[in-house]
Image 1 (cartoon, each protein chain N blue to C red):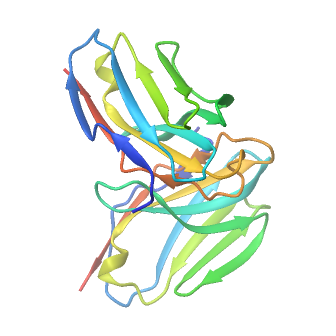
Image 2 (tube, chains in turn brown, red; image 1 turned 90 degrees about the vertical axis):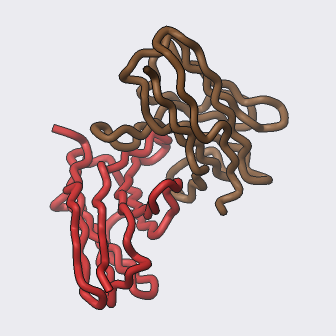
Image 3 (cartoon, helix red, strand yellow; image 1 turned 180 degrees about the vertical axis):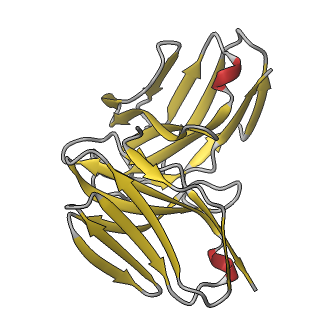
Amino acid sequence: DSGVTQTPKHLITATGQRVTLRCSPRSGDLSVYWYQQSLDQGLQFLIQYYNGEERAKGNILERFSAQQFPDLHSELNLSSLELGDSALYFCASSVSGTANTGELFFGEGSRLTVL
Amino acid sequence: QKEVEQDPGPLSVPEGAIVSLNCTYSNSAFQYFMWYRQYSRKGPELLMYTYSSGNKEDGRFTAQVDKSSKYISLFIRDSQPSDSATYLCAMSALYNNDMRFGAGTRLTVKP
């Protein structure tokens, strides 16, 4: 158990809808990262927050947004969903503001299916 | 061409075999190199971390980085059925939080 909690574990929705994925980082970790994992693209970095502020942005679509709250939990909002958004969405946390140390702790993921 | 290339396998070996997993990359700015292990229906977990070139050993696992060839390897000695998982290489540049992952190699170790 990594200590990172993600909800929901599974989500099935329709095209055009909006969903929110939630992540609680490990106790004491200030950074939260969001990744998308699909069969053909592998793990893709979306966005990072550090202590409530956006720290880095990756290949995140404009239809997606995220935030980190004062209690350090984070939410990833996906809107105007398309079939291609079906994927596993992982949250990871780390104590530092940089991923260079490599010690990211991943949750078990939220599997999103868009029909 | 992807920034990080990793053969997705699958790779199947008998118990006790030496396993070699590899990644190549194109971005010469990468200085931090990681290997993550991902069991089915779980999130990735950090296995090995290496900074710059060289070797690092941890028990049955050895990570090698050859920056001149832009090539990294993970060796697993005396492989066990419990090593059956997907192994992802990952790398990042200094002051860059956009860690790039390989597609992952699915490994099965048969008893």
